[in-house]
Length: 142
Length: 227
Image (cartoon, chains in turn red, cyan):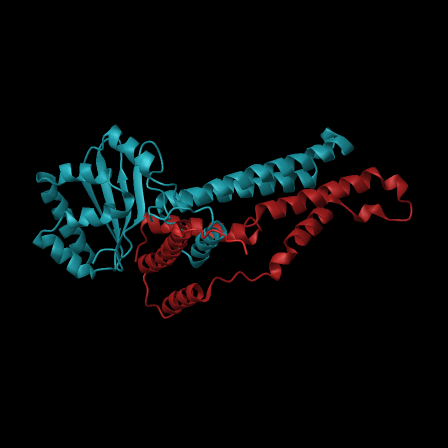
């Protein structure tokens, strides 16, 4: 079946964003601080190499230290699993199962994902408004 | 099936154009965002529409996108289980109505996310500039032009910029949130900023109703809301 232009856009840009995620663009500040930090450390080591006679500073190139910086700045993410509340995870699991079983078209999949997000947004907005409406009980001294 | 739905929808709009719907559409545009899609559908309470909605099974569709250009052509995209139905209607939304809508609408989640990414890009650019200037001061500015570090820093900033562009493109086309990861990204953003999303009237949406001065785009409206 021929794909529409919209579907091609969706696939291509979705794939590109996935690739960018892999290149650590998901957390750009972390990665860029690691990258720049590595480069600055390499520059400082290079400037003070005459004061470090016992160390082979040739090994500390800016490229290597930049890679180490990126790794160090992102290493905590490897141990941090982002999990939402159980009800949301169950909804995602149900959609995932339906996709795996081939029961959902791409259009229906989008609807379900947006529905989950919109429901969560409405829930957050509602809880905020309830919090605002809740009267503050005055403290009484004992 | 989809072709027949499309043709029935097109004929619906063709008939609607001849009737009062154009004027009604004008009135609908400046209503609150939440009720927009429901009122739009409720305005077509003729047998043909009922049949159309019956085919779709109530609750299994959403208005994906409504685009109105300054030339007065409105295109409505409805997302169903089977695919998209796109139809057009000639309307002319006045500048006054647009202005009113701009004032009443709340910033959407996708717009907030784009703003957040934009500010991150500024921070990345500043951090990268500091690194390059630091290297230039110590090693000499002539050496940084050919160094690996310059390529890395500028390359990474370019990737962040590209990610911003892609996010904006997908949000404008209404295809942001199609994948599980993007849906999780949206929810993570909502949960992260739960305290600042201080609207209790439910008018905030995932997508921006208006993406540019030229077009009025309403996306993600009425998800299964019509009974």
